[in-house]
Image (cartoon, rainbow, N blue to C red):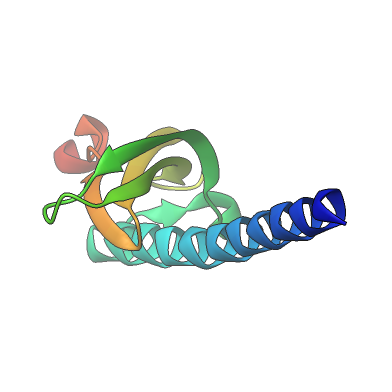
Length: 106
């Protein structure tokens, strides 16, 4: 009886983690899209992918998952560059996107 209860709790926790991860990935994808559009860049594949995940404390001291997503963007569609966006919980913590030099020279 206790084993069944633990399995149900574990399955519930996994379902919550999966659902939460999908929501946070959508936030990261939207943030990457907005960041690219604001710089006149193209977000390639219109998606982000999880690169790292770890536990960290937020400003209130609560433990949260910190997820680092990578994405690819382009200046003109013929090149590819990598960007990084980090979220702590559902909050964007860091976004790194360097505008390539050739775009500035044009």
